[in-house]
Figure 1 (cartoon, rainbow, N blue to C red):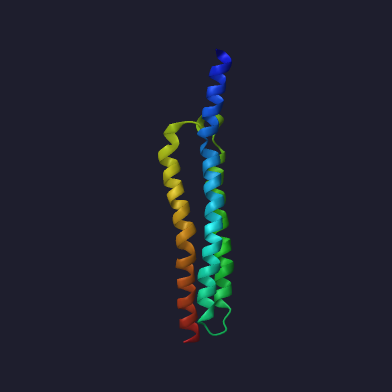
Figure 2 (figure 1 turned 90 degrees about the vertical axis):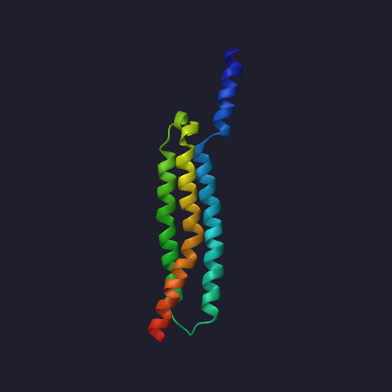
Length: 124
C-alpha cells in the first residue's frame, strides 16, 4: 500500500512540476521570439536604405531577451520538489508565463519599430 501511494505521489509530481513547465515555456518562447525577430527585422531591412541601425536592433533584441529568460528560469528553478508540485503556485506561474510570452512576442515588434523610427530620423 505504501509503494502504491509513493508511485501516485511520484506520478503527480511528474505531472505537476512548475519548474519543467516554465522551462518548456521559455524554450518555446525563445523559438517564437527568434522567428519573429528574424521575420520582423528582415522585413524592416528590405525597405530601408543601407544603415547599421537595423543590425544594431538585432543585437539589442538578442541582448534584451536572454537576461529576461534567465530571470524567469532562475525564479522557478529555486523551488523545492514539494513547491514544484504545489498547485498554489498556479497563479504565479500563469502571471510569469503571460509576461514571458508578452516579451517574446512584443519585444521584436517594439524594438524594431523603435529602431526603424531612429533610422528614419537619422537618415531623414
